[in-house]
Image (cartoon, rainbow, N blue to C red; front, side, top):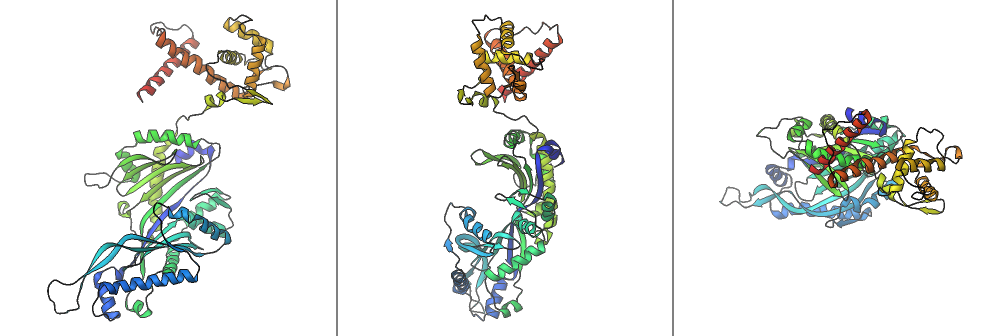
Length: 539
């Protein structure tokens, strides 16, 4: 981040890094193996023969309890619709509960999905125990329940529980939602938009809260909600078997967020950097960013792609093994670099929730290396619609004035004269400007009259290119007008005109050298423009 901060230091409002998406799996390890399932039913529940109906009975009991819980607490419980994002559909309910300061479950969705289960097969050959059955793990489709919860510590999160043994649980958290209650307890004012802090009164407190996300506190709250909403077991069943859940990180994202000031053209810069990033970031640089070596035994893809999520909004992604890092911008003020891991073994890290701080350090290092690699690509020229803005009509008081275009010879001649007359500190009168235009371009008074000059001056004043110093009847280019006039004159006289002349008339003789330093600089500028045009042709 050092190069990126040095490049955009004045335009950055504040920056912070924290966890974004966190997906945690909760396992009942003692009910994940067939031998433990057999011990649970035949020894603890005194079931002689385990059948499909035996396993189905536990599912039916749990679903009946969930329906009763939703009815007693007035919680909607419906089947999920296809092609509808659950988060967007439930956003109004979540925001209403947050405004009211309430916590708890606010929605339950049902969904038919694949998950781990067990199949029961009768032995093919006769055995000593006629009630013995073969239990084998498998994956099948059954009902999954999504509980949408607002917690006082974790904020809004979702918990998915499979309604079939072994009752696997998945928890979907967001690091920004965990940080928000911490900032509220410290009295720090902030404003969030989607999953990002776009304004905060104390950026140091924000980063401190992001660095102190406690995995033990997270596990404590997950245990609480799993006990409240998960499958129920009797006390003697818990005493006889270790029915605790063990939590492991399934997927995790760590984001480096940079908030720019409103007037910084980050969208244009990001689009240009994507073009360069696709060409310059190869597989070896990707490996250096993630901090590992690529050999012939390395699995996974190693490539850079540009995805278009919405119209006009792109995401630059770099993949390697089971990890990825992406860069995108939002709302012209927000730039995010986000490292994601789907298997922490790639980074030689353990998946247990207790190792969350080690994961943060490793993924933040990936973000910083990617930011340093992209800092060179972000240091590019940006597109500014100056010609488009000047070509639009405007108003001077109640009068409508036409736009300024490159093909308007009168305006280009007038701007060129005004540029050369910048040495007049007090400005020039209309008569002086008119005579300068006639002398510079060898025009007759009837070819460019005083009325035409007056109209052109009003047009330039309407577009903010000229001003009247001290409200006197003299005219001079404004600060914006000097830059705009230079662009218009150079584009018309030094790009459009010479290129058209070299194509349709003749090319200049390269053997003749200029006699003046100024003319030599003009020739060098022309060659630079020609080289730029040649590169644009081959790009």
